[in-house]
Structures are given as structure tokens and as C-alpha cells.
Image (cartoon, rainbow, N blue to C red; front, top):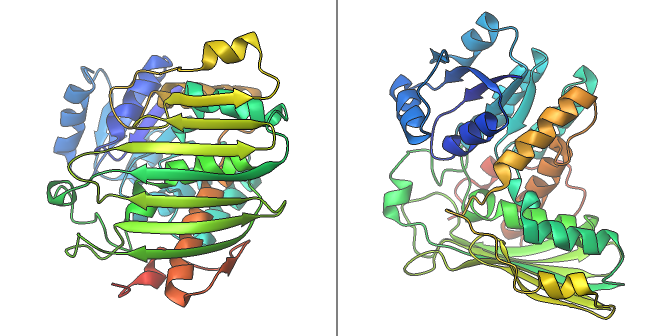
Amino acid sequence: MKYALIGCGRIAANHVKAALNNDMEFVAACDIDLGKIDALFRKSDYDGGATKRYADYLQMIEENPDIELASIATESGEHARIALDCIEAGINVVIEKPIAMSIEDADEIVRRAEEKGVVASACHQNRFNVAVRHARDAVEGGRFGRMSHGSVHVRWNRNRGYYDQAPWRGTWAQDGGCLMNQCIHGIDLLRWLMGGDIVSVYAQTRQRFHDYLEAEDVGVAVLTFSDGSMATIEGTVNVHPKNLEETLYLFGESGTVKIGGTSTNTIDVWDFADETESDRAIKGLEEQTSNVYGNGHTALFADVAEAIEQHRAPRVDAKAGRDALEVVLAMYKSQKTGLPVKLPLQDFASTDMEGAF
């Protein structure tokens, strides 16, 4: 499968490794700073091969009409525009989170991908974590019974050095704050594992320690689901001195699960009324990861490649990306209005928060 990468920053090495692990032909890479392409290749232990370098992704698309899959790993504010251009050209896409910065753009990606028959996947790779897959199997198997509530805690550290790496970080137009950038993976997992059908979001966000940014560095929310269950979100980059945890809890009538670790990669609690031998083997599971991004990119790319070949939807489609984005934007809107926000969200963008802090 012929693969191209657009954007060669912090997360791009995970995309390159995932593509190469799936034996994709890396035909082209694009970044407005060409020097970042070779730096990325060195970081990825990739010799560059016959991969073409471009500073303009539209030129790359025009000169390589045989590209089958492109991943988009630019600054967040450019994701939607680039994704829609790729989709228009008939190119399947993996879009880094968030897939867009407005609900309108996210809905358009979902609509256009369906219209063009193109596979569009949101890069929420933590759905492929071993611990998360076990939890999803338990949910689908009805093992929790009626759900009471759930929660996700993303308690990380991002200091001045991190934000100084790129001028777009922490801006409303190109990035958003900790909820949009760091916490959206955990938010995606919470919504997916709790059943997805959220009816209201009430949130408060603050900028406590990062007054050089436009956006928030801490936020909390209460979510209400259509079945009456509830969930809470706590997300921050204010933890001293380093990342502490990304932890997800699920509390059901007949089951309790806590998935912990730095990136939802361990099973800390696994208790079900109908305990089996396999349950006892799962307890204490710890998937080793080298960073907070986890190991899921390779599995996500494998699923996308299979989806393209089999003409089916990927496991993490554009709507999944849209739904995770919707929760973050609803939190922002709730902070702006001081009121609970009803879902589905019709019209809101990160830039509607300009001047909030």
C-alpha cells in the first residue's frame, strides 16, 4: 500500500513506524520545513529510501496520484483542511487528534468521506491498548450490567519548554488547551466504553499556571448519558514535576474496572460478579510502553489498511473522532456560557473561546 505523511513534528515518528511495521511503501513525506523530514527519518531509523520530500502537500498529491493512504500529523488547526483536500482527491486518511477544531469541519469530514467512499480514521490509537480492548469486550459482553458511572483522569505535565517548541501550541485556532490536545484520547475512551450517547455536558475550565497561552491548562466536567448513567472528566497539564497518570474507571452493577498507568495501559482493578479463570489472568496486566503514546499506532494502521482492502469502515472512524471532539467543544461552550450544554452539539469551534482567559 502506497503511503504518504503530511506533517513531520512530534507525533510523526509513531505514524512512520506504524506504516513501516505494516509493510507500506513510504512514497512521500511533506512538511513546510523540509529539514524536519530528514530529522524525522533519523528519529525513525529510516534511511529515507525513495521517499520524495515536499513542502506543499497539494503538490505532493498532484504529483503522486497513486497514494492510497495519507496520515495527517500537522498542527491541529490544519487537520480538517488537509483531510478534506485528501478526501477530495480520493485518498484514504488517518487524521491525528483532534480531527478538526470545529464541529462543522468534523461533520464535513464525516460527510465527504462517506460521499467519496474514502476510509477516514481518527488516530485514537489507545482503543487498541490491551487493557482497553479487554474492557471493551466486557462492555460488549454485558458483564457490567447497568452502568452507574465512569471517570477519566488525565494528570500530566507540560512545561514552558514544551509550549516553546512551536508557536501554535496552546492557541485557540491551532491547538486548544489540555482538554483538546492531551486529554482527548481519554475522553474518547470514556465515551466509547460508557456507550457513547451523551445528552449533556457541564464543565469548568481554567488557566492556572500557563499564562503565556491562550487556552486552558485544567478542566473538569460532568457528563450525563441517555441511560441515566454519569461520568466525570478531569484533565490537566499542571502536575508537578512530570506526568502522573491517565486513569479510567468504569462502575457497573456487576463489575468494576480501573485502567491505569501513564496512558491507560495497565489493569489495576478487574472485578466481576461472574469471575472466570481468564479474569484472574487479566488482573495486574501491564502493557509496556516507551512513551505516553502507547503501542496502538501499528494496530490502528493495520486495521485501516484492512478496511481499505475490504471496503469497510475502520474500527476508529471519522465519526469517532467527531464524537471525542464534540465533548471537548461542549466543555468549552459550557465554560463560556456557564451552563450545561445539550448534545448533539450543533455549532461551536475552539476559536469561539478567544479571549476566554
